[in-house]
Image (cartoon, rainbow, N blue to C red; front, side, top):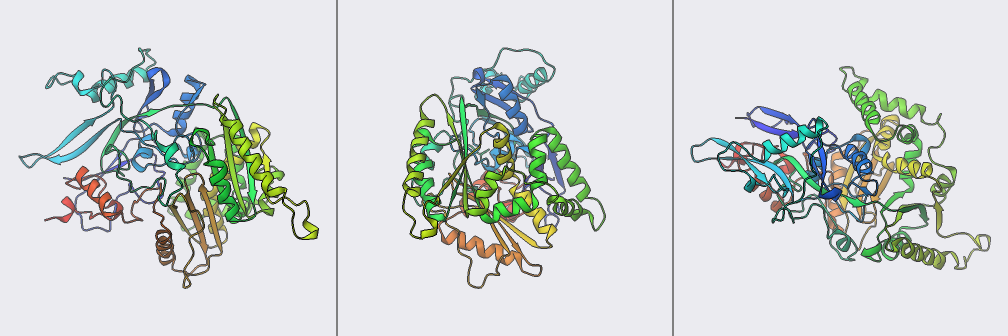
Length: 537
């Protein structure tokens, strides 16, 4: 009699898969690490890939680009330098960078549930919706001792040992024809409604989706996607949020058929903080890449911070902050100049997929910018001044620099707070598709020293980091912001999971309880009771 806590790469931000000591539950916790289940292999001539639960998204991205240069995996940017697992992406519904791909989602998986039989014994039920020929439950004779887990294990060992096998195919069954990505997302994200595009409490799809540890995911099937034959990246800057949101509606989300690859937003505080505390981190990603070496250095940092000394948790970030200004600006000056002169910025990547989508997007962009910049400026000394700035990345090195600059934002904020002796609060939330303005802070709220907002702009999923002076009740400020987001029609959390930080809605809790009626798996997540059977007795 114990509880089981599945873990991937330990990259979560909300305490979603950690033992909890402050509960009345007396069952001993068992941590089940899945990060060695790294095998992955293509199926359907590379149109899809089957991944065991520990396969990292960076590892997968490298494999797909090697095996099929004209295709790419779901996640090739974002937190890839931490190499979080594909199973964790499904368990949280994360991965919001790519407008054409949507968040991580699949209805094709192999996962386990725990229930109790008529003899009062706990038993494990294996749910197989992989939909792969040779791995369907119907492919095995009942009571023969053979099953999908054993067959998949043999297949995985063959792959690990370099044996060549005929590439597997999806079966012509209900599961083989099920979704292995969020294929409706392109249309959904372009709807200009008061609904959000995506959020963690979404209850749709197979149980593995957004399960947050209430089932044990062993393997998943994912779509791969066409890689663009040509790509252009722009840093577009705006004077106010109204213009920025209009750009989002009229240029980026005008037509689901020619969406940009990605559209990431940064406000002035984000640019300032990343430049002040994230230069070294940006350079590390630029020159070391997002692969194994970067992951190793991150683990070394975590090991140092876990040492039994009072200074250990802070020494790495203090050092990064002190040395930061000794390092040159991490992105070319043409981008930093725009970053300092304008208050709102969008990093937009656009691709050519052989359907004219790049040309269509460029026509809209040019018309939009022209409609603003050709307007007369009333002040005499500002005649000819640009209202909107567009700066293009002219080399792969500049694209890499911009991506690194954006995706060290969360880490740079932590370095900034530690270096400046401040407290930090981090929240992720989804705003309505027809919204996007900053949720107002209440009149009684403490004034943050910095309010850093950066987002997956296309889907309006916002990451907001607020820095406060020591002594401020940050828990209270976080809850006040949460209520403000909800008053604006937003939902939170959006992609980082409920963990121990957020109380899930009732319908989400009921879904999790039906998956795990004994409360054996990851008890206490999302505000659920942590005791056996949710303390029903």
